[in-house]
Length: 103
Image (cartoon, rainbow, N blue to C red; front, side):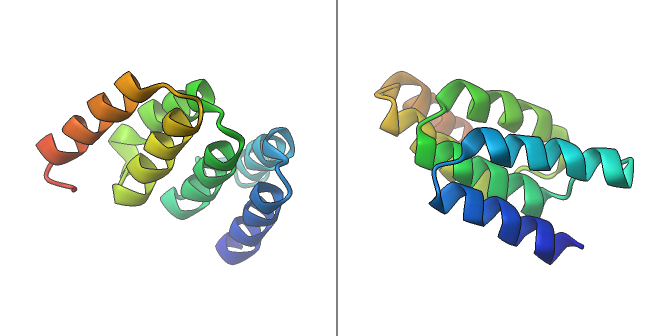
Protein backbone atom coordinates (compact mmCIF):
# COMPACT_ATOMS: atom_id res chain seq x y z
CA UNK A 1 0.00 0.00 0.00
CA UNK A 2 0.97 3.65 -0.25
CA UNK A 3 2.25 3.93 3.32
CA UNK A 4 4.51 0.91 2.90
CA UNK A 5 6.04 2.17 -0.34
CA UNK A 6 6.51 5.64 1.13
CA UNK A 7 8.25 4.25 4.23
CA UNK A 8 10.47 2.06 2.08
CA UNK A 9 11.57 4.96 -0.12
CA UNK A 10 12.08 7.19 2.90
CA UNK A 11 14.32 4.56 4.49
CA UNK A 12 16.34 4.47 1.28
CA UNK A 13 16.65 8.26 1.43
CA UNK A 14 17.96 8.14 5.00
CA UNK A 15 20.46 5.48 3.96
CA UNK A 16 21.62 7.49 0.90
CA UNK A 17 20.42 4.67 -1.36
CA UNK A 18 18.86 6.64 -4.20
CA UNK A 19 19.44 3.87 -6.78
CA UNK A 20 17.68 1.37 -4.56
CA UNK A 21 14.84 3.84 -4.06
CA UNK A 22 14.51 4.28 -7.83
CA UNK A 23 14.39 0.49 -8.21
CA UNK A 24 11.62 0.20 -5.63
CA UNK A 25 9.74 3.01 -7.36
CA UNK A 26 9.90 1.08 -10.63
CA UNK A 27 8.79 -2.06 -8.84
CA UNK A 28 5.79 -0.22 -7.41
CA UNK A 29 4.80 0.69 -10.97
CA UNK A 30 5.35 -2.88 -12.17
CA UNK A 31 3.28 -4.40 -9.38
CA UNK A 32 0.36 -2.01 -9.61
CA UNK A 33 0.36 -1.37 -13.35
CA UNK A 34 -0.07 2.36 -12.80
CA UNK A 35 2.06 5.34 -11.97
CA UNK A 36 2.89 5.63 -8.25
CA UNK A 37 0.96 8.30 -6.35
CA UNK A 38 2.32 11.79 -5.82
CA UNK A 39 3.07 10.85 -2.20
CA UNK A 40 5.22 7.90 -3.25
CA UNK A 41 6.80 10.00 -6.00
CA UNK A 42 7.66 12.72 -3.48
CA UNK A 43 9.34 10.10 -1.30
CA UNK A 44 11.58 9.21 -4.25
CA UNK A 45 12.26 12.90 -4.83
CA UNK A 46 13.31 13.09 -1.17
CA UNK A 47 15.84 10.31 -1.75
CA UNK A 48 17.15 12.10 -4.83
CA UNK A 49 17.37 15.35 -2.88
CA UNK A 50 19.43 13.81 -0.08
CA UNK A 51 21.82 12.35 -2.64
CA UNK A 52 22.02 15.58 -4.65
CA UNK A 53 20.83 13.80 -7.80
CA UNK A 54 19.60 16.94 -9.51
CA UNK A 55 19.17 15.60 -13.05
CA UNK A 56 17.16 12.60 -11.90
CA UNK A 57 15.01 14.85 -9.71
CA UNK A 58 14.37 17.22 -12.63
CA UNK A 59 13.42 14.27 -14.82
CA UNK A 60 10.95 12.93 -12.27
CA UNK A 61 9.47 16.37 -11.61
CA UNK A 62 8.85 16.81 -15.33
CA UNK A 63 6.96 13.50 -15.35
CA UNK A 64 4.91 14.58 -12.34
CA UNK A 65 3.82 17.97 -13.65
CA UNK A 66 0.67 16.63 -15.26
CA UNK A 67 -0.03 14.32 -12.33
CA UNK A 68 -0.19 16.64 -9.36
CA UNK A 69 3.31 17.88 -8.66
CA UNK A 70 3.04 20.04 -5.56
CA UNK A 71 5.13 22.16 -3.21
CA UNK A 72 6.80 19.07 -1.78
CA UNK A 73 7.77 17.90 -5.28
CA UNK A 74 9.31 21.27 -6.13
CA UNK A 75 10.99 21.67 -2.76
CA UNK A 76 12.78 18.32 -3.01
CA UNK A 77 13.87 19.04 -6.58
CA UNK A 78 15.10 22.51 -5.64
CA UNK A 79 16.99 20.92 -2.74
CA UNK A 80 18.62 18.36 -5.05
CA UNK A 81 19.71 21.16 -7.37
CA UNK A 82 21.04 23.18 -4.45
CA UNK A 83 23.06 20.28 -3.07
CA UNK A 84 24.69 19.92 -6.47
CA UNK A 85 25.39 23.66 -6.84
CA UNK A 86 22.93 23.91 -9.71
CA UNK A 87 21.64 27.24 -8.45
CA UNK A 88 20.32 28.34 -11.83
CA UNK A 89 17.91 25.39 -11.81
CA UNK A 90 16.90 26.13 -8.22
CA UNK A 91 16.05 29.73 -9.09
CA UNK A 92 14.19 28.69 -12.24
CA UNK A 93 12.15 26.08 -10.34
CA UNK A 94 11.30 28.56 -7.59
CA UNK A 95 10.02 31.02 -10.20
CA UNK A 96 7.99 28.25 -11.86
CA UNK A 97 6.56 27.22 -8.49
CA UNK A 98 5.41 30.76 -7.80
CA UNK A 99 4.07 31.18 -11.33
CA UNK A 100 1.87 28.15 -10.79
CA UNK A 101 0.59 29.61 -7.54
CA UNK A 102 2.07 26.82 -5.45
CA UNK A 103 4.62 28.71 -3.43
